[in-house]
Image 1 (cartoon, rainbow, N blue to C red):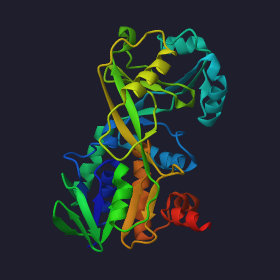
Image 2: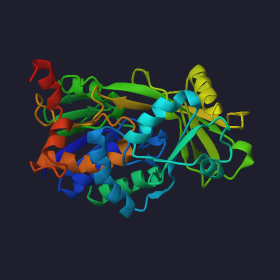
Image 3: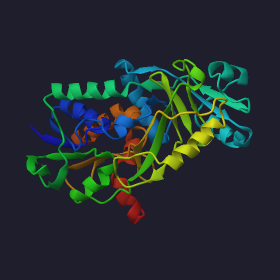
Length: 358
């Protein structure tokens, strides 16, 4: 039986393990941290929005959505965009790009009573959903284990050679290696002798606030400013706000920058009538993108037996099913259910083509 070692125990690696196990591979997942989903997967805003992302991302979203519904991990939320007078042009651009419907201001204030009277435009997309990210991650882990897959935490990979992976001083057989290492994916690729993809981690900060004005926020939609200059959403009875920052950083266990957070909270405050009086806690996660902001999925063009499942950015949960399925199709030589064009735009080979001008 072919042995596949998946490096990384976030949503990408765990969903891939389930799909590979179901396809008949013997799977071992190696996660450097003490628990699955510690970094980006454990700090997600937990939203499914089919129209979020570029054309390739949207194709993955559409192919993933039905399975997320079947698994019962989606619940209604909706997203509302609100704009001040100076944001009219960006509002128009986002309205068209995201396929949203303009909303009468009276209705917007009814739905979210803390909106500022300075809001001049509002739009709503009711199809956006919350994702129960922990339930989804654990369901994939359970499925992977049911196929005989091993999921090992606290196993940082320190060397990759043909047919072998070394983690914590122990070497394991690896007929195929899948690089699902998130922000560390280029570093893992270099261990195997692969060329860099240009993957760049970006920090995104979050603050948890009390529910504004003491309101019951559970039924409110997610809010965001034009150009994704900030966003806010209900979370377990409270209210989380993000500056929607994208500051390039090295791969790390990220933390929020106080100044970035303060500036983002000020942008949010300009759109609401209830000022921020207290931050209960804050944190940050990493969103890792390659330059074209599409995922990297498939066989490395230069390193036999080495595959990529990286560059999820902020789309890991809402693309996971289709991404894992596409990986299996590439490994097994099947035609991609996403179509040839999307498959080519996901392939790691596109980076080599760009270098030689093809």
